[in-house]
Structure formats: C-alpha cells, structure tokens
Length: 336
Picture 1 (cartoon, helix red, strand yellow):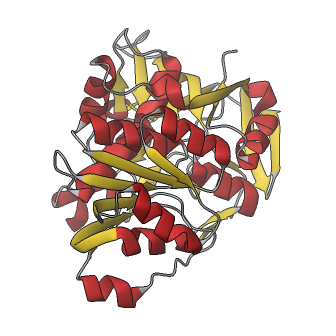
Picture 2: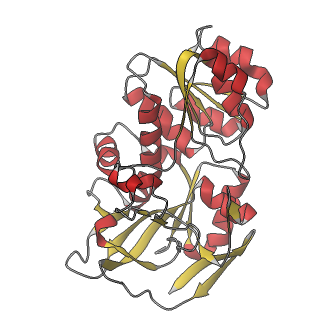
C-alpha cells in the first residue's frame, strides 16, 4: 500500500507500507480523495501546528472520502469524519465532541491521516455519500462543515453585513454560506489577488489588503456602515484587527484562522471599548447532515473552490503547490 508520510519540514516521502488491519468497530476504507487543508500546510512547512510538534513520521490529510471495503457496508461511498471523540469526558457529555481533549483526529499528532491508499477507521464515523456528491465533494464536506460551524458561531441574521477576513478555500465557502443564509452584504479580504478575484466572482465586495492600513477603504466598501458580524479565517494579526475595527459595537467576531506558531495578537483595547463578543472556532461539531443538504440543494458549489488535483504519486508536489498558495483547494486522488 502506498503511503505519503511527513518526516520533517517539507520532507514528505512516498513509501510502500503494510495494509492496515481494522480494529474493533473499524472497517477498511479505500481512500478516493483528500483535500489539503491549511493545517496540513502548517505541518508540512513547520513540522508543527500551534503547540503540537511532529514527534514521529506522520501521514497528513483529514479532509477525505472513500469506499468501504470490509464489513456489511462494503462498496458504500462515504465521507470520512476525521474526528473520533472519547464520548466519555465532560466536554463530550456537554455535546462538544469537536473540543474533546482526548480526541483522535486524522493527520494530527500520532494519528495517521488519509494520504494513503487505504485506512482503517471507525465505521460510525463514515458518512454515506449521495450520488449527487462526487468523491472530491465528499472530501470537501469537512472544510464546508468547518465553515458552517464558524457561521453558526457568528450568529449572522438575514440582512446582516458580514465580513470574511481571509478568502482561502474556507473563506470562499463562507461567502457562499453567508449569502445562502440571507446576508445583505458580504465583505471579503485577502492578501492574494487571485483569491480576491474568486471572492468577487462569488458576489462579495472583496478588497486586496497588505497590512492594516486599508481599513478606511474597507469601511468605504460597506457604504460607511459597520459590519454586524465578522469571521477571521486568515490566521494573521492584521485580519483580526481589521475585523475588530469594522464590526459594530456589541457585534461578534469569530476567530478561526490558524496562525504561524502558538500565538495570535488581539488589539484588546478596541475590542473592549466596543464590548465585542469574541468567539473562537475550532473544527466542526455534528454538521455533516447540514453540509450534505447544502450541497445537494445547490446552495453551495464545492467545485468553485477546487483549483488543482494530483495523484498520490505526486503528493509532494501537491503539498508544495498548496504551500505556494497559487490556487485554491488542492486535492490528492489516491486512486488516480
């Protein structure tokens, strides 16, 4: 079986390894598509993400779809839920499994991810895919779920003006979700011109930014009226500061971007003066059914965020391409 394994910063190697053996409650899954996430790029570029560091060679990839190859559901196409919470701790009992401190998560810490031909995974974490969603779409249900979770935290109401600070793949999904939920206006920002163009193509009033000095222009893009709510999904201080500066008093700012390193700086004075509600978004929580419905109903176009597809044999180039941020979502196809 072919496996793409990270050994250190920018050191990924394709190797043959034994087939996985399913444990209790698990089945064998043939992986058909894997999206490369920003968190994968932190592992790839820094051999770390936040305070977690690479301690052993790791298979990346948690946005995945596949076909079950063992057990009574053999032959079924599925999206692979990458999160396996313990279901016993206080956090899980409160219904917050995505924040479980003992969670097992594909492609994180010592839990190998999906950039391989096959994996063994708990059967109850495999979500049936309708025929209307192809394999790539099945993999992208995970980042769509992250976007759904962030938008729910933002508390946006129909007619609201919302800012999306960061127009990468999740930012582009958030633009679509915001309009599907009845946003009156969506303002989007990014440092890369091709992302700004993609955001505009989805209907956002999108602006190119290089630092915090463009806030006056951003406010002008909203007609001089402050935003009702905002989601930061860029992982940089300037994006957080711009969101805080442009949201109305007592508004909500959701912080979902992953910074380089463990720290993100917030201009606390402005947030305190406005009495803002700052919320932090991590992963997603029980949103696969909602994500599937959004796609099958035509309210979200997943193809709009896909720019590159690579076979598993070109996995190192796929990660390098994604790290150069030349396009949008890069997808690895193990069966290609």
